[in-house]
Length: 214
Image (cartoon, rainbow, N blue to C red; front, side):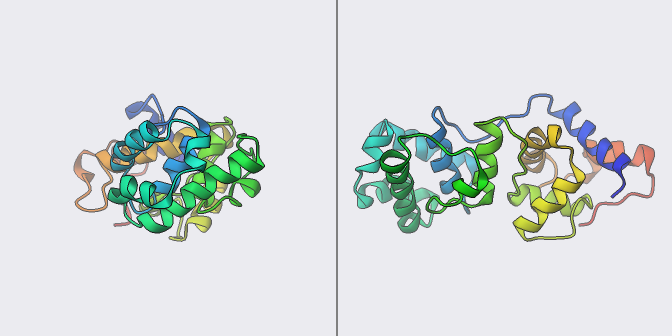
């Protein structure tokens, strides 16, 4: 995709969503790691409902590290895959509390060593906690990147590579947050609102032949 088209997409998203922010609620960095793990095959809205209860029962890292898996499973059950997610969440808390003195690592290589933490969550932490360039290839990102010809891949790690080539580093974190908002409001998985799409409208002003890949 030509740089000029990429620039149009970036600026169009900025115009609609001037404030880019993470949709997962958290106060402490480790809470974002846990929320990221819970978000697999689950909506951010449901994750936020569940973590609100989770933090009420386990208000700090120590209490979560000492939690019984069955009790955690009961709380996070609405997020699905609750057996493995509960084991991973407790594993994350234990590794952080007992091995890392509660400090979140600042590299993707170290982050993905935590139970259940993949590159998506690792990139989310790198961007939102440490303020470094990050490329979060979640379901919204993968779908929209393909529709707008930013990527020809569906595997998250390949989409991340493509976005690193297309999106400037200083735009990366906010760009990925805006894609989530855009994916919910316009470029939905089913019945996307192409007729009112602000990105498509901007693209067609400069490239009348442009069509989304649906």
